[in-house]
Image (cartoon, rainbow, N blue to C red):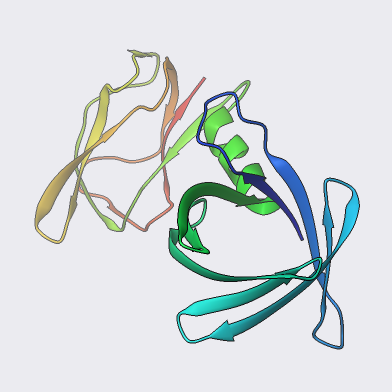
Length: 170
């Protein structure tokens, strides 16, 4: 698995690529910026004893990826650790829908109380599209992007499942 580790919190800090493979023997094979590195990790309760190229460091971590606090040899650092999968998911989420149609789906199961738009309406970012009742609470479903309503898939009073198509924008 490839990880990208940013050791400095400066905005222009460059991440370092770290490839880690667990061998069938349980040993770790690591490559740091294209250079093979000998690594061994032994859990010691809440602390990890980490050996990197013969140097042993007791490491305590806090937080969850991608932002992690680490204490090693009495020194606290904050690092950003992203797996290749995390980066791809973040890029896809950041990019959002592209091109032609954009379908707004129900975030939860519920009942459509009121439809606020019709086919052909121009929609602005954040504009309410419909009101969905779930667990006795009314939730307004809003547009994440601008566009024109190509189709409204629901009517007031309809029950919908989570992920059901509500409105398609063009």
